[in-house]
Image 1: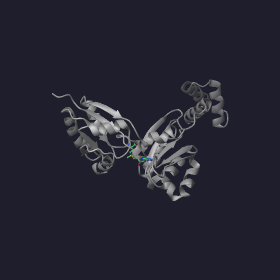
Image 2: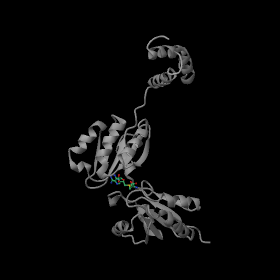
Image 3: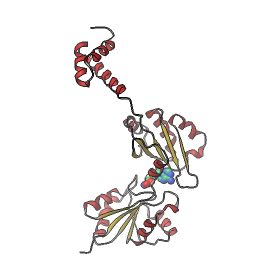
Length: 283
Ligand code: SAM
């Protein structure tokens, strides 16, 4: 049995060919096969880089069938590089099925890191507290997008989204409706001729985009500030209020106050005073 080959996960430029790394170039030259999302698109990029390695297609629609065949080749000792149309494979791009199967098959997986729109946007945002979460593309349908955003509204983490130009205006309007006032970074056409990186409050984003049609063109990565940390006292008061208002529907004031004290850990006297206020008059 020959030694198994390695699956290299190779990041390629997101718009500027100069961002290809020397290791990526070397890997793409040396491997036996390159699995590419779109072989026509990638063959043009590879030709410009002077690379003539054989290509095979691995995209969202054939990944399940193509991945086992590639695993057989890796088992037979061939080295394979996985690339997507732009940026890092398997980040809102195909590749995760093949990578998962490689792990399950005991094949070595080696990333060759490089460009990614998400990382580039985050690095230029200054919005990193307390950390960030990558969401990728929001649902295209307005109702599904709004409910996805509603589920994210309370997260303190900075959020990173990808968005298509024809939905960017709707998307920022929905972000503002769901999140209220927060900082937004609109990173457009990163690394390309018309790159623009603009940070502004969400309340101004719709007008800013509407002011110039060029601002709505191209590829977008969005970075949105998380919800500001809330004072613990405010949070506890809100929790007590919610608990009491439910309990008061079923119990008299004193019992509701006792139950609320046990449920929330708040002082009994405070619960009693608050329950009296909520009820509007002593019971
Ligand atoms: N895997 C890629 C990566 O690592 O960046 C992302 C692939 S995803 C299919 C493509 C989306 O990434 C675009 O629709 C856009 O939202 C974002 N994107 C890609 N290139 C970009 C660029 N140069 N500037 C801003 N956003 C970009």
